[in-house]
Amino acid sequence: MKEIKVFAPATVANVVCGFDVLGFAVNEPGDEVVMRLVEKPGVRLLKITGDEGRLPLDSNKNTVSASVQHYLQHLNRPDIGVEIELHKKMPIGSGLGSSSASTVAGLFAINQLMGNLLSAKELVPFAMKGEELACGYGHADNVAPALMGGFVLVRSYNPLDLVVLPTPNNLFAAIVYPEVDVPTKDARQMIRSKVLLKDAVTQWGNVAGLVAGLCLDDVELMGRSMQDVLVEPVRSILIPGFEQLRELAMENGALGFGISGSGPSVFALTKDAAAAKRVTKAQQQHLNKLNINSKAFVSAVNAEGPKVL
Amino acid sequence: MKEIKVFAPATVANVVCGFDVLGFAVNEPGDEVVMRLVEKPGVRLLKITGDEGRLPLDSNKNTVSASVQHYLQHLNRPDIGVEIELHKKMPIGSGLGSSSASTVAGLFAINQLMGNLLSAKELVPFAMKGEELACGYGHADNVAPALMGGFVLVRSYNPLDLVVLPTPNNLFAAIVYPEVDVPTKDARQMIRSKVLLKDAVTQWGNVAGLVAGLCLDDVELMGRSMQDVLVEPVRSILIPGFEQLRELAMENGALGFGISGSGPSVFALTKDAAAAKRVTKAQQQHLNKLNINSKAFVSAVNAEGPKVL
Image 1 (cartoon, one colour):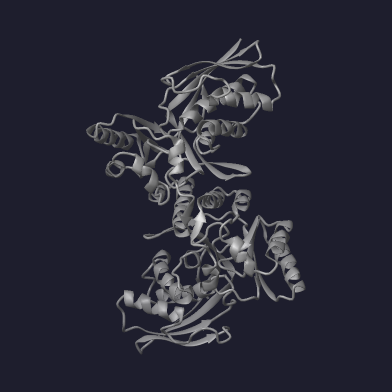
Image 2 (cartoon, rainbow over the protein chains, first blue to last red):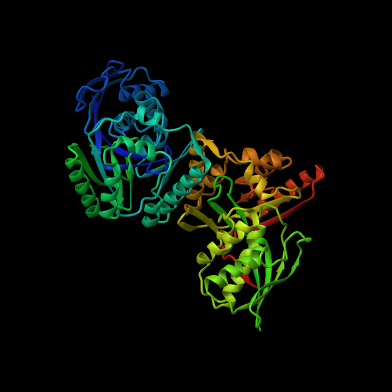
């Protein structure tokens, strides 16, 4: 019996100005999957811990088992038997790519058990299927960085074109998850389907600036580029004290600040761990005053993606 | 009497997917300005050659003299006397930054004569004033690369934030100007003020990809990113045989192809001079069959900006 235990990282999608095209992975939090190859064919999800009963245990409906099924179908291996345990180690519905982390952990695990038949990049489409199941839309800006590590640009969805961008040294993420509920589906539906061209131009100037900052190791340019005139003004309404959280981030040395994915988590990028810790501390104190529980994560950018534990 | 002769380069604005935020300079064509410091205060445009009488000789209305006036006003030097000759060496209304080349040549010349008081970057706002005069809109995607050389990203207009991007070695531009009339003002007015968010996302994925390609020296990525779902579908209507010109470019080894600025000039980027020559030759032959006169320019990317002749 072959068994493997895998960690896959949380991810910050959008990165403020890169709606649907940019994301990066962090070292914590993340999810763990234990996977076993067994005699009896089929994919079975045996157990989920840490989800407070919120995730489906049905192997066809859970994104982890469903994407492992897709993977094995693709390889035309209905003979393979797989047992899965999912250990949620991060908050669900937090805007930190929770479903993505689980799905990616599962795909990385099965690919390891099958002898690494596909590259991280090749696994992305299977993980996107999982995202479709979890939130109704097969986006790649969480699963691509979770699988490939670092900052990943989704240059195009059709055909899928993924570019791993360089990460400046010592870049840290300061993440705070205010424990309020913002389902991804609702957060998407708030966004207008038409936008002003002039706002779109502002946005793509910033996306281009953020990518240039990453590539040219210019963290100040990255910070200046972390502005979102299209999505944040709408989504931030759902996040209590958002503008105050921004001020606290910037006062405490953040390069830039914004919503992680569809929220409610917020994140800042900083030049070092100390600034990241100052940011999360100040923000958690503020949320505390508002009687909102929160969780904080301070982490370097995760350059490697999932790993075997 | 101090006299100087200056060349400033033509520029390709937008670079397909970077509407209003990207541009690059070429070695040819370009414009020349001869400038003299004289006793009698004031800025006088004495002569224009090569414009077929299309440009105003009134010193307050011509972009060259008007932006030199702005420059001297900024320095608070009403005592300075300047005589200017403008020698147009490139087609007007071609989408190659013709007004920009003239304006930039003038600003570079006066700045040289005054002892290089401002940097190339600091001259950009003065040149933008000239653009406002020439085409009703003070954009920077021609004047910034004309002044600074290379590929320039206009990350933000307010405040103005310009980023010079690295240029991959041996990158060539193949430019063809079909001699049909497309005034910049009209070309701008054709563009819708609202766009679909999903199209904007496609566009900023491509802008990000193009910038990443430039920074990471990945010319294939640059080529894949040179797609414009927003502006090109509208503007290309004004360019005869546009889709055929694209096919000829791609068949002859172009990395990517599109409209230069607001057209009617088209350009391709290629990996070397030979491919650029093949592209322009095939395109000119095609335009010839359509009974459209054309001019072609094959040039490396201009890394230095204006120069003293």
